[in-house]
Length: 184
Picture 1: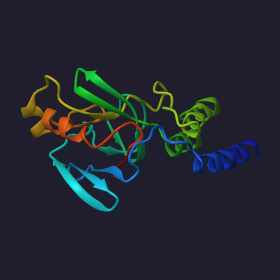
Picture 2: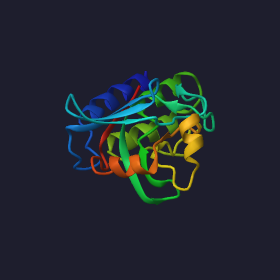
Picture 3: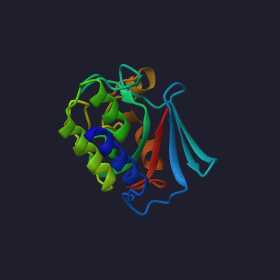
Picture 4: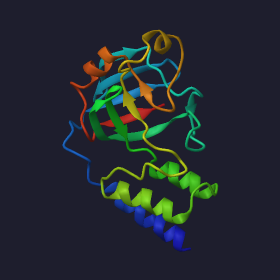
């Protein structure tokens, strides 16, 4: 019963959640993990398409645990930006989401304290804990000094979405902390 009450409170608060920044609310990203492309959208209009992206070595879907090399599906925000990443630039996603935490709690993969920490971060417009059993440090990044040939021939990340260096530079003109990212 306490858990149902907590979920009701979280859902009410989530609807009123402050955004992580003043990002242009009309600009968002749609990541297609089947066709391996990323659309930069303004409202419903596509303003650019970045093709031949790479995702996790084990594809996309429900992340089972840290280190599973799966790119998680869902709706996220850009939670932090590292302009000095070894991958050129890194745009961290607000993974795990409350939905991921809820599924993991129901499956017994995380405890109630971990669930509450994740939910509290989202409610407060903060980055959720990144070192839970669900994994973390999932984001969009470039290659840095990585091998372009490998990038073009296979999915190679540990769950992130990888672009070429030119693509990550191009992307940076449209997004900022708080930008919505839908991974499908």
